[in-house]
Length: 297
Image (tube, rainbow, N blue to C red):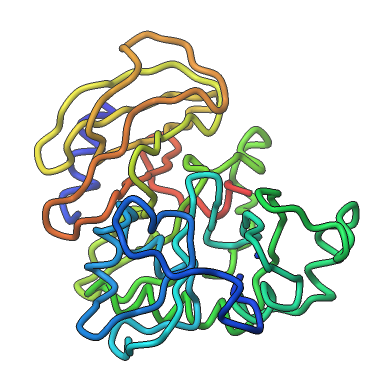
């Protein structure tokens, strides 16, 4: 029954310092990851993302002041490491590089050094260490840039960091403050009707090698391929709730398996059309679609 409902429901479906001497510009592919680089004449964001083995959307999110349409020689870009995270609503997890200060990090991400210090109370500005992970709260300029980046990279005009709707009074008490299915994600399509009035599930972009994780305890009821949706995992939870994880490349669970919150369900694959690593995430109660933002924290 759930599979039939699913088939019909988804049918429509240290930052830059003040002086350039601090950080050398890498010149080879093996050196680019985790560094600051300087854009050369003829470079594009797509080329640089491929060179660094970083999804384009992830590169854009770590460089909120950079526009793919107006990239120019001499601009400096941050190439994120695997330890760094850039969730849609923030805060970022940023890895300190040589020469970094709270002021230089704040300038890059469009926030303030005061907010950085408040977000990292146990790490004073004078005690930053190379390799240390700090929390970076998003500033207004970073949020605007993320929204613009999201809109320019998807024809359906997605929103990068939409406001969270209030939970519905009809939802069961168990459906409260579930974690998101990805550690590092960006919303490229919100749940809701498209321009033709067809209800569309949420679409999240992430990075290579990411796994979709169970957002609540439950039982795997479906784990197989589905036409136009790739590999799909469906988990049933208490109070007749179901979560759907689609566009997967490899399933990591079996039908009948009991899963806990945070258990890996499937490996995210790369889309041949967008070159992104996307997860289609759907939440339902008794087969009826629900906006996941009402439940996810």
